[in-house]
Amino acid sequence: MTSQRPRARPYRGVPADQRRAHRRAALMEAGLQRLGTEGWAATTVRKVSAEAGLNDRYFYESFADRDTLLLAIIDDQIAQGTSVIISAAGEAPREPQARTRAVVTAVLDFLTEDPRRARILTHEFPASPLLQRRRIEIVRTLAAIFAAQAHETLDQALLPETDLEMTGLTLTAGLWELFTTWFRGDLAIDRGHLVDYTVALILATADLAAPLQHRLR
Image (cartoon, rainbow, N blue to C red; front, side, top):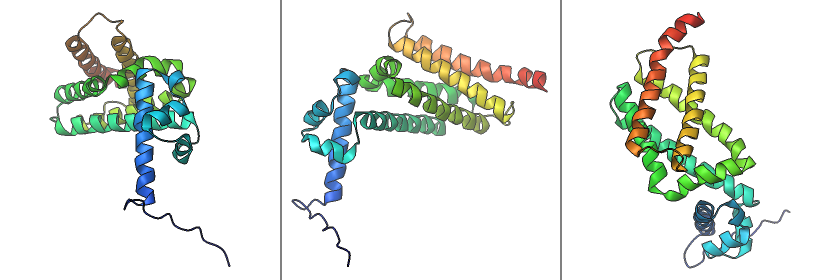
């Protein structure tokens, strides 16, 4: 006869699973705070646990190590960011310029409404090999969203799927670097200029797709 582990009892009426979820959420927020203000070198297990008001042992209840927490924080922020992009696109008119401007504006709003996000973008991604590897996956995800929006907005895609994917990768990776440079303060332009340029770049790329298609045939 196999023995069964006793189920954890509710504490003060709160079930064990809910308490674990609350502890994980507190650790995620504490990790974001440390990462987004002091950087990854200062985001230790002990400091994150203290920031969350928890004993160190609870950290390992949710995360195998510090890198696991880092990726969980980044993945959560990217999930929020992609949700913002999809919502902005869905609420905008089905017209390339209006939709592009809505999405670009929403992305910049998302990055500026919480200064920790911009700091992670400008300082932590370039400094972390782990995040550089994750960046490759994020760029591919954003490029796929670009391709989906091209199909949604245009009456027909002007490029074969492979070339549309390459266009999305080129734009996404390039705009990542552009936004990073701007948030770092290395571009002497205001936000309006950045938005106008980004929108014009995306639309110009779409306009250039038609002659490119003919040359590739």
